[in-house]
Length: 244
Length: 215
Ligand code: HEM
Ligand code: SF4
Ligand code: FES
Image (cartoon, rainbow over all chains, first blue to last red; front, top):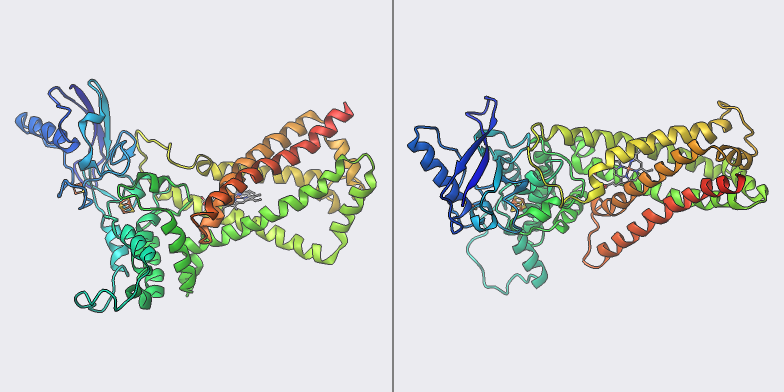
């Protein structure tokens, strides 16, 4: 397949970036999207040019680093997958693909498609944990947890911190991410003792990081690769009100 | 403690409460206005007089103005913060998954605000003595006003945009105050749709009826 790429190139944090077009002739539909970028970079290196920087680690949808904005969608046009799971089968011969970094004031571009996601880290550090050692797993029935809570907590815990919710949101709000981090704790007995402090501190950290405010648009839920639901955002709001 | 007053969630909470109050006010306002369709001016004028004299309603009027101001101020504040949160825009961006009317809240809201000013000039300012007219006969004021096609068009357009605002606002407010439920939320969205159609339709009917009958 022949693919034209319109990619954001930016040398460093403080330099102005711009879109650059590249033609790729020998793209196979069997390639993953990232392999296609690898091919581009091999070509660029052969030509003595600077390869396109992009984040990736696991390439199996669990590390959350590979997020980029592909043709107007975080992680590309296919629902419920990360960019590393995006296949070139989704594109046609002759397509032009626009590739941009996730855009938010809280996600400054480091280089090309690589963004600084420390802002999410700061939110997590503000309270997304239990501050005492909980030891090894106790006998399963000593602390009863309703099945529904266990399932919902597990679903919330599947958030990989990729930031696609922020990228998708017209307000660049991190509420879906934060709601997942608060919910996974709020739903389980271990999280209860520190629930109030957690809600207060994590919301304050989110605001400090310069994310936008939630308008309940639903875009985050639609674009989350892990199908985190906005019911978690309503729960986060409740947890926050209960904390005061 | 001071953090709670400025936090993003608190701002949205206050805004949602003010908005929900306005949502309860609109059907009351519409109910009274529908008396304008009666060929006898008496019932409407009596209701209007009751609304301006009864002490409890006087207090509600203050609450109403406060709610409008709070809602607008917080709305603008939130919107500015949201614009700042994404300084560099996407070149190619797909918004098909964003609830359609949620994108235009500041614009539909802004037009409602301009409409409110016009609306106050048409009616409320007469009561305050700022604009000429008979404050004891709003029936005639309305029947006079809506013979003007331009005024009619301004009112209809504003009501349609109000409907757009209300459709997203109604269910968004429930989510903001923390209510999201497997069964209730789809129901709330249904009610939001009905409300967002019926309220503007009801309000539009009045100038339309007066205009047709008078011409
Ligand atoms: C007068 C001018 C108005 C302005 C400038 C305005 C502005 C806004 C804005 C910008 C939002 C979206 C906030 C967000 O992004 O989450 C909003 C939401 C809302 N509006 Fe308005 N609005 C106005 C009038 C009204 C009226 C007349 C009503 C009701 C009768 C109303 C009810 C609501 C409600 C309930 C919400 C939802 C709050 C939430 O999302 O939690 N607004 N308004
Ligand atoms: S909520 Fe979804 S989109 Fe947001 S960071 Fe977590 S996994 Fe990514
Ligand atoms: S590279 Fe790890 S999630 Fe895509």
